[in-house]
Amino acid sequence: MTFDDQTIMAYVDGECDAITAKRLEKAMQSDQALADRVASEQALRTKLAAHYNPVAEETVPDHLTALFEASASNNVDDSFAVRKSERQDAKQRRAGMGFAQWGAMAATLAIGVVVGQFGLGGQNDTPLAQDGGALIASGPLENALDKQLASTQTDNDEYRIGLTFRAQTGNICRSFEGEALSGIACREGSQWQMYNMLPGGTSADYRPASSGEINAIAAEMMADVPADADAERQWRESGWK
Amino acid sequence: MAFEQDLLELLPRLRRFARSLTRNIDDADDLCQMAIERGLNKRDQWQAGTRLDSWMYRITRNIWIDMVRADGRREHVANDDGAMENVVGDDHRRMEARMELTDVDRAMDRLPMEQREAVSLVLVEGFAYKEAAELLDIPMGTLTSRLVRGREALQRELGEAA
Image 1: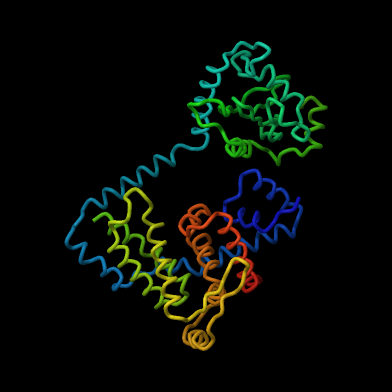
Image 2 (image 1 turned 180 degrees about the vertical axis):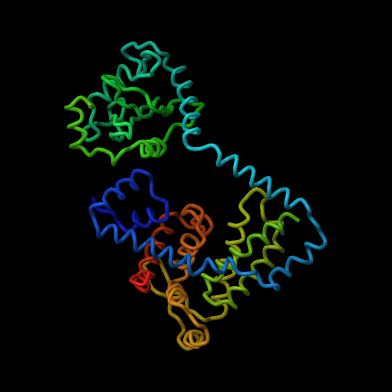
């Protein structure tokens, strides 16, 4: 796989999507030239930072701060320290809720929406069923996860398979997108257990999940890079073990 | 007042930004001074709840462009096809002699303005692509192509040493 300058740059600048970042990191392990290109872009950032950051550490010259003095002396504001600490508190509160918690909240919300929408009948035409407390794929979704290959699927398929990958747990997982339901399902025995679900495009009250969101969650789960077309086919032949 | 306190807090970053645009300490502080004055004068135009830093960076950058054009030190012909700006020779050489320029200063100074401001906002000031593009009023694609070209030029100048 080759990576253009723009992709390498985006990676170094932290602007790369999670899947591309994974692929690039994987490729760097065996492609020294690529690793060197990335290292040299990182070195450029470091060099610029080392050169300019000390400016921000310097004491600001008096003639600049003096511009403020007239107005500041007319409007003494002792609430600044209070506001600053409030801002920091708010920042910490935001930081305190990590990816997993937000993810869990989003998933819970989505499960409520989705289950409400489809019911849990396990009939042939519903995509979800319940088995011993676990939410599993059923009907058309199960069929897609079992059989469909990303490399051969068509626009007419009810569900589109996105990424197929081995999770850090060792299970094979697949991301999918449908009109009303998108998410990630992981193989447990002979079933596809829902790992993550987000409403698809037809739910009016909830913003549909973007493939970017699902890919970001998938990237967190992956043990390695996503399967290519050959690996996907082999995994299917071996029953997604 | 809150506005002034927040602006005061921004000063170290604004000075860094100004330095990366102008490379020259005196010019950078002149630029900062003008930006602060304009910011204080136009404070009524700043919308509370929006980012003060982006607003001030935009002001700083606009003044810098005016400065460069007004003092005629450069003929600005840079464009997105990668044409380099012409540096008017004598003045430039005189300045180089007076200042003790580092290789980074020199390499940044040789970048066309469009590339320099993009590099400065993203690589030095740490703005996200989207934020930098909004600040400069350009599409994301334009920003990233300027970044690619600016980086290439910097790598040519600083590459092995970087």
